[in-house]
Amino acid sequence: MSGTSQSSRRSPIAALFTDHPATVNETYFEHMRFALGFAFWLSVAALAALVHAVVPAICETTAGRILKRLHARIESRH
Image (cartoon, rainbow, N blue to C red; front, side, top):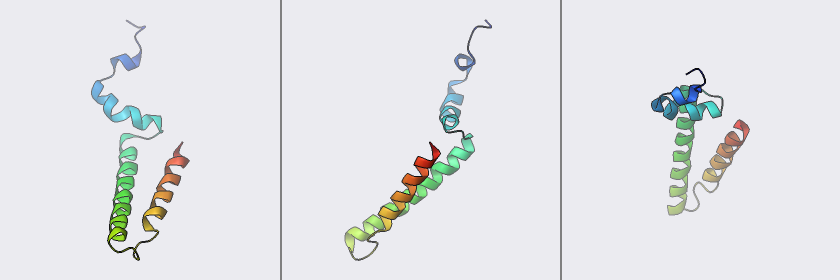
């Protein structure tokens, strides 16, 4: 069956872990590093927003600045 495409013979497990990172020209571990860093900064932004919700004079622009920076990182990847 030489006419069978390689993607149809790929493991479904491989597809879960490597197909999406390949769409952004990254390996699995490069993509993991990017996503974990992104998650970290989203958590920091969420914490800043929570602090700001309780005491409005604190962290007035922190969450917004972090989100703008993360958005720029995402846009520069595509």
